[in-house]
Length: 304
Image: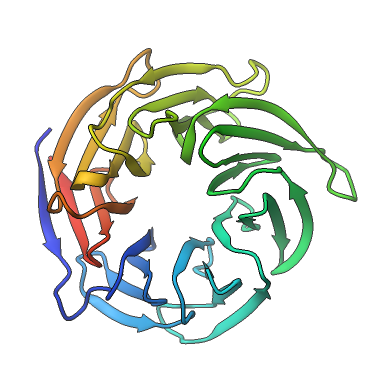
């Protein structure tokens, strides 16, 4: 499936450092960067506004269903932009000495943060509810119902929060070799859950697809070795498609991810080889992808 770069942010509008995170929500694109800034774009990549929630490198962003945008930084803070499209209001939720490297918002709009010490914090109504120590640094995570998927360089840890526990008791349910990032993907089950979980192989070049089933103990469905020639840095998904990107500026589209092996259905070199793609986000249509690179540029890619 051929793909084209439809739009690239202008030199005057781009981030002055790496783009570290890209999100799409309600016909707006949000990008965060090493310059401490969050930029709000139209879906056609017209710059709407710029916010500066941090004075240092932004690690991660997450957004809830109401449009509240959360950011974390190497300055040890978590900030909340209450309505970044129409307001400059910014609240500080946390300031600490740890590096909070990833954020995630679940379907109930609960926020989760993960740090370099292996602590995952669950927030409800912007207040700390529980803390879970998964021992290893949390570089990426995903949460569905009471299951936490967290990962660094070696293994995906599947952690179950014990329902009804007032103290936040939890137990490890599975450990699967691989490396970050982790992404919920595939079709929806009857309970409205994603059918699969995707991670990378330990060398960062391949993809491992896991069946999202506690009953079946999270079996590996397939592994695609050497999916890229250079290390994969980012994943996003929508419907039957999984997108992967990273070093070398290559973005790939995969389909048939619920099958025994995926099919490569599209590929494009989005950026110069010296530029690394750090984050990708699927737009309003599942064949439109927004790409953020180490050169500070944001690009809109369309697959046919």
